[in-house]
Length: 301
Image (tube, rainbow, N blue to C red):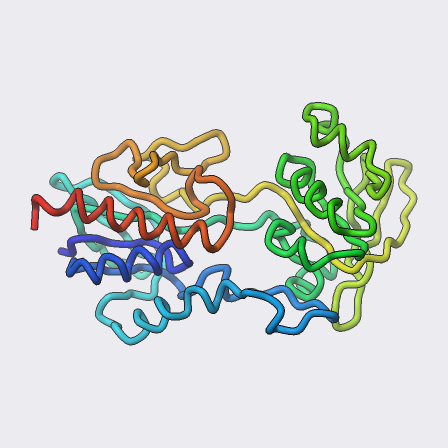
């Protein structure tokens, strides 16, 4: 029996676990790896490492501490969380059942991929899934954004403030539903490729072109300095979907102290309905969730 189990080893989970350890809680972090999405970095031919603040460096201290404190981590995936005697049982993929009166779910979200030739080969080599993180690097560059939802519109809008040109590959159905969509349609440095789809990613050491098919079935190659797949994220909330309230996108709903609707279950990072999928935001949310969990546990300690 642990005081607290943290599920997830990304920025939010690592921060939560270290904060809990420093509160002298008997805590266990469960994750398949440590670092989460900070293990991936976008490579661009004109950018040197020293010019970018990397998420990995920001969480490396917490990661290094947990790698040293091997008693506080268990490298395994989680299948399901169930209630038991006022607490919770976390069932792992290796068959272990681990118990605690409190949990922090910090399992992040999956990027929705295009599933086309070349995407896997060029992921983080000129092609990535977060324009909001990298937009400042594309001053006077040509970029392509793929997606239909608010995330794609926001990404194209931010890129349009710095890039020489932005192509937006989308169905076009959501453009007139928001002021940002209307602005993008009128922008001189934005070309909207409506009812188009990506067929292939082409490049050398980095992604250089997209092959795009239009509604008439014709294909054309578009040159780009950076390609951003901006489809809505898919939160990894399945293990607690039967317990806590989720929003329409499947994200765990939390309050400003990272509490869910179930006493004893807290959540942090991209798996929640918090604002902005950013490393620094996730770190802060992880710290808040650990402090909230400690306050909840204090009468039991």
